[in-house]
Length: 180
Length: 406
Image (cartoon, rainbow over all chains, first blue to last red; front, side):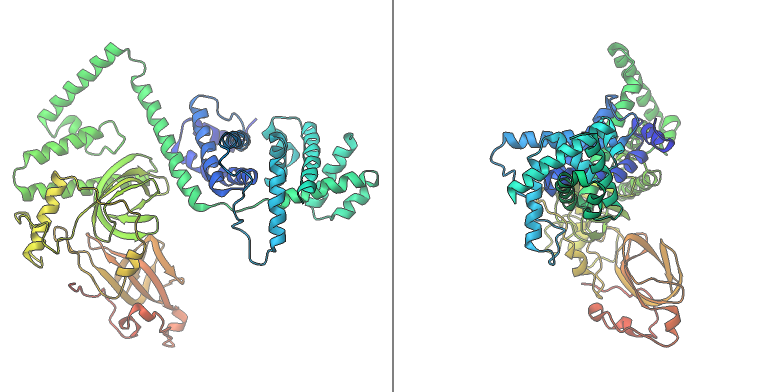
């Protein structure tokens, strides 16, 4: 059951109210962008995919298939699909270097090269997990969502998320060990 | 793996979120310590690559695209609501009837719907009628000078419509014509309307201060217009290449015949010529810097009242977010106004800006030279360097400087 604020937001969204639409974008863009960037590690692609997620939102609402109770959960769930679609397209175009990461724009000179290299390896290891494992890790450790929130986004029960989280971390640990 | 390990992992993650270290978590679950250690290290790895960086430029551009798409869907929905229920034949009949009504109404002129359409805005159903009526008015006027006056009035009406749309946060497609009064990175000011430039914005001609531009775009809730197309109309005719007549030159302050002829060309171009696409360029922010000197540059286009830059230094009489009064002069503050320091009543400020077509002073930069408390001590910062020497004189009578010809 959506809370009153969410209800108002959902109503405005369904009416395509310009003010509400604008607020929704401002409010949720950072979440979606961070999620997508976490999984893609590429700012340019992350921008495109994030934009695509919001377009999907409009299209879904137009068709009456938009979010029913929680816009953030819907957007993050859709972001996961959009990232998976992006990966599929990338695999179809082998000319693109999928393991090449853009430089970390946030890095400060004081950050050691080793540290950046380690982060690059972790990102690479992450891409070797299943999409669902990447999704749960991105939600839990990229977005810092609680188990309950993660369960809501993934449309799973909390216990199922706990199990998935454990398997995902174990897989990540293996991949990191192999790469480092 | 069993339920206890899942729970142990989750409890440890919660503890670490709250500030506990890895070892103190493991102490709690000695039976799972080995498994937990690797899992928690992986969790720390996963957390280490999370970033908070969100590119604001991408957010802004994506928002414009998102809002445009939403507006299009809203329009489609509205059209469906209006006409979707009518079968084709009835729709044709309806359209025909609407056309007849429009012709009759336009025929009798100035009454009924036409009057009602006076206050309509882009996106309103009566708005096309308003534009049609304006076109008819233009065609009915034979004297070029009267036509120019009408054209100017209609141009101003477009700008007012946009301001109303912006104030009511309506997203609508708009077209208007005005003078470039400010150039900033990714934004220009045209007739006091902030125009956002996107990479997708088609720009015909070179954006330069005081040029006239035709803008097509969409109003945004943030008070700007995102431009789809910008056509810059030539304002310069220093070599006389545009000179071809002078029948409409209403400004007697023209410097020479060539400029007068150029004006008439501008008017003509607004009537019928579509400027050739010379080049596609993004605006040059340095235009602002290169022109924003102490020197005052009059407009080279004499078809409009001259627009000049000004500089002023003096004591602040009053200050609000939207305007500042300095030595009796009221100066508007726009979102692009650069503020250096916090002006307050009694403080001494140096302001640089421009005077728009309406004679309003618009600040581009406000620099606080001394606060009200330090003013009595004669504390002049003496800064400004290249800003010129005249504004460093404490006793100078503050007023917008006089104009100078190029």
